[in-house]
Length: 335
Image (cartoon, rainbow, N blue to C red; front, side, top):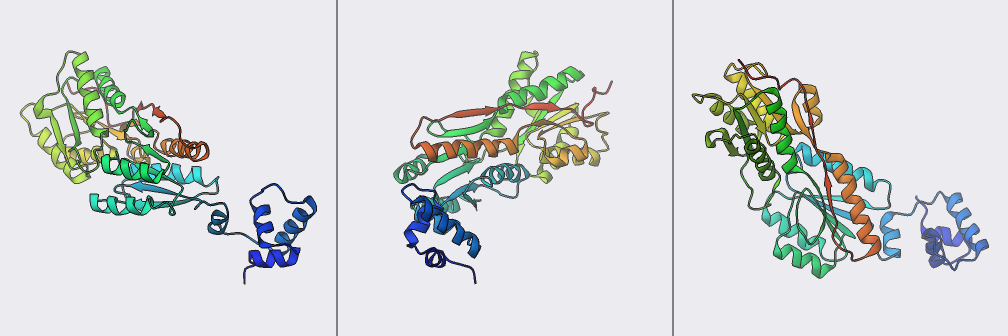
């Protein structure tokens, strides 16, 4: 049976409160008493649980992370960064997957009770008015990752610049007929990334004296199968594009499958650019826009720890840069 704090106190000849003060490295413990307690801990191989330690200092020692669609590869990579950063602290990670507004409301009610977590990270979720009010009532330190709100510290990537850089890469190769394959806006989450990338694409094309034709703009479900269908539709046009910019690597993979269905070689007749730079992008030789997914998770934890340690402070906006990773799915347009 594992030793308890009562066993440590009995062996050291002190109260459980004294053991707790030693465990939490608090002052006002006689040096000789501290040595006896530490020796008893070593002799009994005592390992205090994080829950017990949290209760002794009035904290839960837990951080809640709320994500929509946890199976998405980009979300998983951000979670890896969050977990890696928290692993060096005393805090435990509790992840909540929310795929409906109803589930989000339920999770939020739970997390803002005041005794569940010490801080919260929202990934890809922009809090609405009701959510803001609940967080404020609970005085719950909160940080956003991949979402925008002026009232909260947040870590975002420069999606507008990402769209521009994708266009600039293709223009440099000689492309002029460029299409964009993005996401239909999700009203429930108000997720802005695809919309910002789309704006960046349009701005860069206009700067080059070009326009993104309506027939070259495809918005829909962010899944691979929908992207495959959209690519087939684009390539069936009387004057098809010579390049497609996709709002995610997953969509780029679907677009590549659609090109294969139509007998269109990549990159000889069609160039494809993805977004995210997931691990599979390197394996498939996919040209993509690299965004620091793992690093965004690490940065988000850093901001949250600062808030929890320092209390109320002004919101911080941290913007991470992006870059083009050129691989084998882009090349000059067909002659």
